[in-house]
Length: 230
Image 1: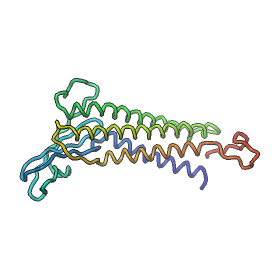
Image 2 (image 1 turned 90 degrees about the vertical axis):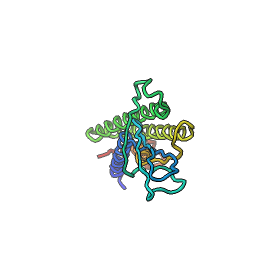
Image 3 (image 1 turned 120 degrees about the vertical axis):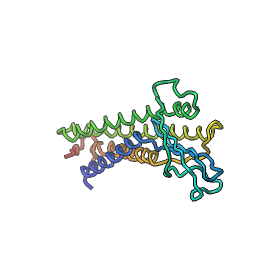
Image 4 (image 1 turned 45 degrees about the vertical axis):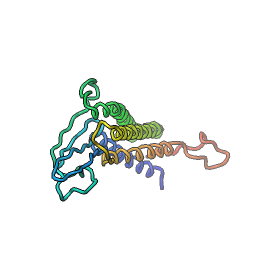
């Protein structure tokens, strides 16, 4: 496969990774929390949250959906939903509510790291635009920082995922909340996909932008003719 074709494929994969990361950042289905349900024909309170807000949903458990020892849900059942933003940069508010206080401690870090990831993606995109519109050696040169920026964006996505995972773990283990079970939802899956695509493809783009290997044993990388990207 020609080098130019490989770079085009890498750029397409990076676009998919950027779309996944943006979707994860703006949505609030990273994790779903559920309490224990002991009776039928009663309303229970499940919750889902993302980087910016926590949503509680009151779900009516009928005999059709009740199973002994089961938890509240699934979250897709109809019910009244109330969402509250964490107000990351206004400390002191909602401090009396444990779940808000707990989530703010972790989500401030996760949200900030995700913003860094978006910033790296923007910088990488600008380098790609410069590479596509430039001429001569400048086109190849801009691919190197682009690959580095996208790899850094993937690392930031991974750190944000780990912070959110610790947030969920602390929420479930606490005795001050009613939630006893959890599962990671589709926003979390989008962030995981973004991490894999951005990090691996960023490294691949960086490798593709390197000077080609010498064709003869007595050549050095500096002596080899540059492989221009058309």
